Amino acid sequence: MGSSEYTILKQAMVCPDDYAVRLRYRSKSGELTERVVSPIKMTDSRSLLALCLCRENPRRFELERCSHLELVPAHEVLMPMEMRVLEAAPIRPSKPKKTPAEQVPA
Image 1 (cartoon, rainbow, N blue to C red):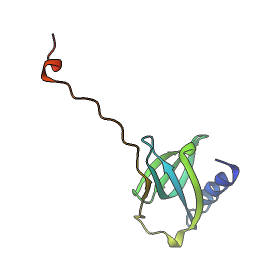
Image 2: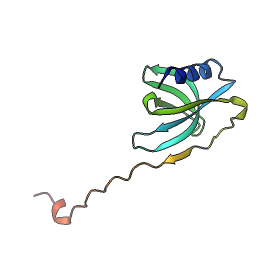
Image 3: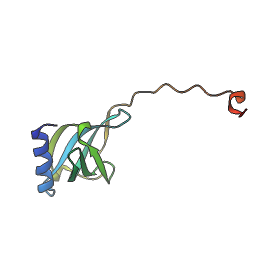
Image 4: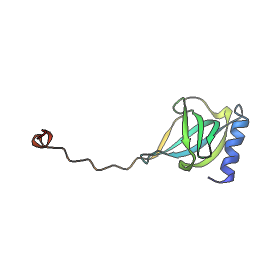
């Protein structure tokens, strides 16, 4: 994240009645979603505590997984906001199932 993204987060934190933030977030599993959040505070230099207006709960967001941040006027926000899945998580190959003989301890 660059300085302009930090400026967006700071402005939304300073004026929470005026702004929310729309962002894209990539989960650990690889799913890419677009969400609207109300930033609460930076928990450290790498993460953000924010109210996710899509899930209607506080969430911690890893900043390195956030992109495309933009300020949204608060009057345009109604909870719950739609969380759009932009890219599904990659499908992991399933592990082969053990045969009954392999499951019984020797």
